[in-house]
Image (cartoon, rainbow, N blue to C red; front, side, top):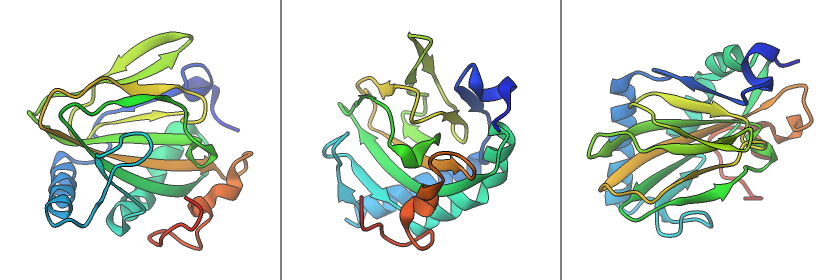
Length: 191
């Protein structure tokens, strides 16, 4: 059972320094390099045109690496499901939505932006909007299937984010372990 003190009431938690700033900057540069070399798809249904990638082997490695941090934060054992990164650009925004079942626990990690200033992620808590600004390497952990979230129009040059998703090993979404892939780091057939 998930600890009452952390998630049942608030449904979110900010994790300062979820990853080291140096690691976040390395991952940001990795994304920028992939985009520059044309190794990333352009857009998805939520943010058309924004470079994004599902299940990148580097980010699936991060997904697995921080399982202990997520478990400590939510108070239960979790299965990693998938990673997804996106490079937002000027004019991009994220429409208000909730995540699919593989995203019972979602972690949005700031990898950096140009200019270097936080770009708020909005969540709805008790029918009220809450703006959460994250420093590089910090993350917002929230119940992706329960908490509506969005971003307003981005005014900078770029913002790199990675989204890491998990499910409770004994919960109703446990079947989504590895997002129904055989292992992490391989393409999904159902996305």
